Length: 139
Image (cartoon, rainbow, N blue to C red):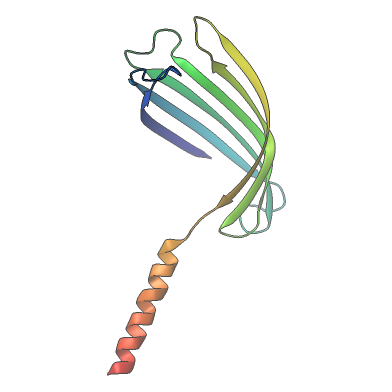
């Protein structure tokens, strides 16, 4: 289970040319749960269920109507290919604010995601080992 909290500052403007930018703030909270299906924990070659809910709340002088901007829920099936690559396929439902008082929309979205972790730390360690080996060979 993972918790994620984000704070964003955004400068937005209307679609009219040369309209001024308005500052707004957005708070995001996401709760994610994973349930492994063919292993006892999330390791390589594991098939898993994935669920998350993320709530977006906006604040600022330019926010005049509803403070709830978006609520996203996702349910899907994932697979961990290796320690750096993961694939998820699922369904996302959103309930989001539209411009105007009490104006909302629901969206049903099929979603396919590929997550790739770039491990720069490992490369740095390998380069350091190479440097040490070169230095040792010089002496």
